[in-house]
Length: 195
Image (cartoon, rainbow, N blue to C red; front, top):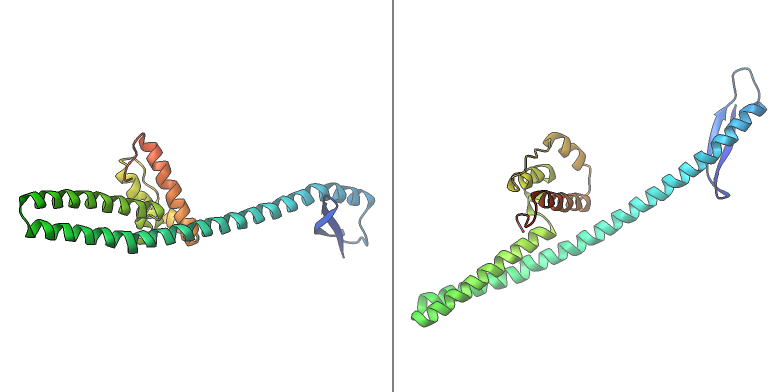
C-alpha cells in the first residue's frame, strides 16, 4: 500500500512523495508521518527550485537561439552583401591599375589597399559572429586550433569534448565557441589574437 505525502512550496502543491508502508503494516506510524512531513518541506523547496532552474535554462536557450539567429543574419548580410561589394570594388581598382598611367595607377593601388583592409575587417567580423572553425572542424577541434593559434599549452581532449559538445544545439555550440575564444584571448594577454 502506498501513502501520498503532498510536497508544498509557499502553499502551492509542487509534487507528491509516495511511500510504501512497512511489510506487515496497514498504515504509517505517527513517527513515520512526522518524519515524512519534515522531509516534505525541503523536498518541496527542492522541486520548486528545480522547476525554476529548468524554466531559467529554457529561457536562456531561447535567448541564445534568438541571439544566434541575429548573429547569423548579420553574418550572412556581411558575407553576401558587403563582402562581394568590396571585392567588386577591389577588382575595379585592379582594372584601373592595369589600364591607366602612373598617377591613376597610384590612386587605384591606394584604393585597392583600403579595400583589402576592409575585406579583412569584414572577414574578421564574420568569424567573430560565428567562428568558421565551428562549421569546418567542429567545436572540439576548433578549440584546439584556437588554443594553438594563441600559442597556449592547452590541448582539449577531443574525444571527451566531442561527446559533450555533440549533444549541444547549434546556438549552444556557437555560444560555447565564442566564450572559449574570448577566454583564450584573455589568457593570451592584452591584444589577444585573431581579431
